[in-house]
Length: 79
Image 1 (cartoon, rainbow, N blue to C red):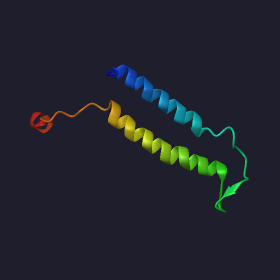
Image 2: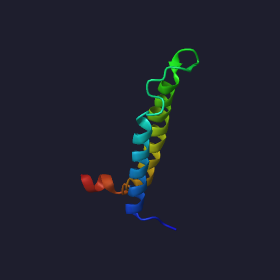
Image 3: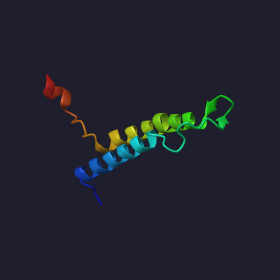
Image 4: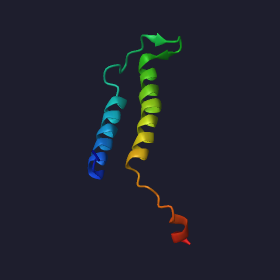
């Protein structure tokens, strides 16, 4: 079953909204304890996970999924 381009874009936008919601840390805001690995609060670790790891993985797959294919003769047409 092949998904339409519009449906793919809607799914990517929903993923983007989910990452944006997770970025606003309402549940651990202002909480210092527990300190993980002796130097960083749990809220900061969560931001590293969401902002660094999950966002990078999401953007990689969004690029692979919705970016149009580059034609093979692209360079020949541009000259």
